[in-house]
Length: 356
Image (cartoon, rainbow, N blue to C red; front, side, top):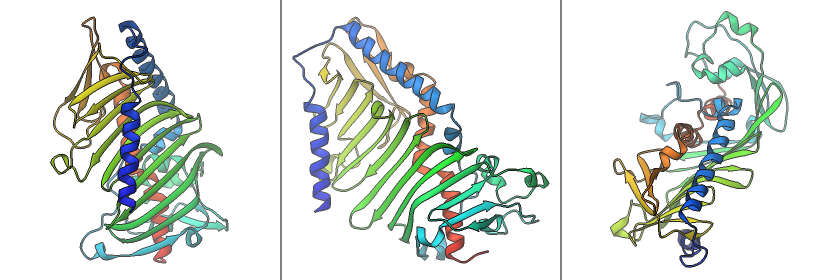
């Protein structure tokens, strides 16, 4: 039943997007279309400049340093059930001298200093930005202050196997006692219902980035950047499982930049561009994929070329410019969120397994 609801919901969502575009009323002239997409790109670039300048962005985009543990062999059969109740409390980083860089549990470097209804981890910001250094002691560590904090208000990690688990994390991060942002993750994998994943980071300056993926008879995924509730950028993809000829390939793809929307319907073999819901027939749009990728986006293996009715040509990558790489980094970081997984989850595992 849930899969059928997903099919209906997904179809309704994209039908509203596509059929909401009028071809006959309010057609914009060439200059207005250019102005609309230029304005959308300008607002997006301005937003990305403000986002990347924040401490929160540098924390969120910490990359894998090779220290995260992979599950292999007999470990693939491990099971855990970790609620917030088990791990709540305040944990402060304390330097721990050791000669073995990886020989100790992560919690060895933290002391539970007080009780709390949340899980609060306090540690030096420099250790976040260099995760490899967290389990490595240097004499200078004794001079560091715990100026980074992550406060977890909701958490559970129920893992049966790679195809059956549910994970929830709701948290706030602070730097120097000032709120830097809010991170929320939901990751549910079911052998019968598929994958339901969503992550969101709300920056202190009101910008927020969102990623979601939900599989089923209808699979929908997307990534968006907003200023509060104002949509600045979004890419959405829909595939339908029972469309066997197209399984694993795009059914509908939508790119939104400001009030400009580009829609490709692979079944109808159409690509259209609209402004405020009005399709601009005078402009031509071409999707340029470098190689086939079922999750292709403007930030990964895809570009979009727009030919205006005066013959001038622009590509989305050129319009966005250097922000393309920053958007890609933000997208990938929301999908993996290394810093939260490395700190919160591994402390939680250590508590669960009573490692000290």
